[in-house]
Amino acid sequence: MDNRNTRRMMERMGINMKEIPNVEEVIIRTADKDLHITSASVSEVTAQGNRVFQVAGEVEEVEKEKAKFSDEDVLLVQQQTGASREKAVAALEQSDGEVARAILKLT
Image 1 (cartoon, rainbow, N blue to C red):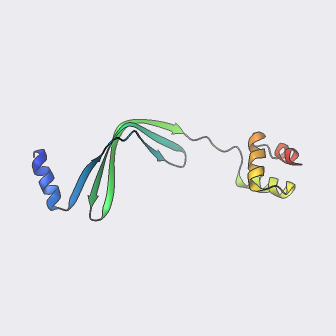
Image 2: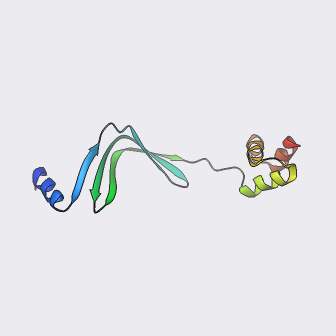
Image 3: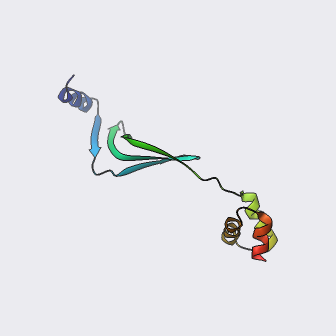
């Protein structure tokens, strides 16, 4: 089937497809990694009220850095020092996740 016949059949079925111009990069974020798709070609397909994106390009997987401390650690630092959540998180980051050092920094 040629391109013209394919387009006509898609139109009869209520499917609309268009290329999205000038796409530089697409990033898909998951819980443990990011997928960076560069030199991306993106098409948008609209069918029955749904929008579907088709992405093609060069994929690079980037692992996310794991936090060195938990929410419980932040809460403990807050309780022991009376500091705000932001200050407790900052102290834990500066202390490489060590709760005792973070508490000492804030007291």
